[in-house]
Image 1 (spheres, rainbow, N blue to C red):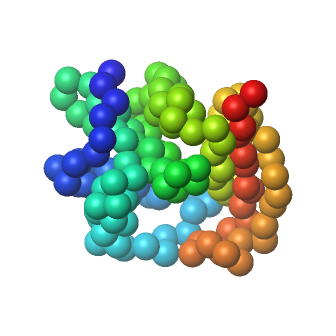
Image 2: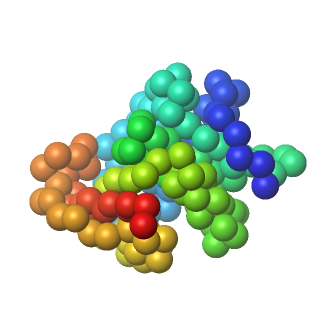
Amino acid sequence: MIIAPATSSDVPAMANILTGWNASTEWMPRVHSRASEREFAQMLVGNGWTLVARDETRLLGFLSRDKRKVHALYVSPHARGRGVGKALLDHAKQVSDSLSLYTFQDNDRAQRFYLREGFSEIFRTDGAGNDEGLPDICYEWRRA
């Protein structure tokens, strides 16, 4: 697995990962169009916030971070459970003393992952601050 800064050529694969996750997540309301997911991926890459993980043939996942705030961590369905998310997160931990992020309260898999990776729950919201209107949880990690 190779971890490297994202380039504009990664945007279509990133958008596909976002679209696939939204489509396969039953509790996630469809509030963003395919075009807006592509624009979001382009913004993440354009801001210089994004690292991608890839193998020899395809993009496996990506993590977007602005200083200590993680904006996105997504792994392609075929790569889940293979350490891709952990590798991306470990890279972010190497260059930061603390990280914070949000995940939806319905996303049990993400919650287990972040707790296993040393994050602590800071607070919960009613979802009024996100596009989907879904309750979420703020997590934080601090270097020991």
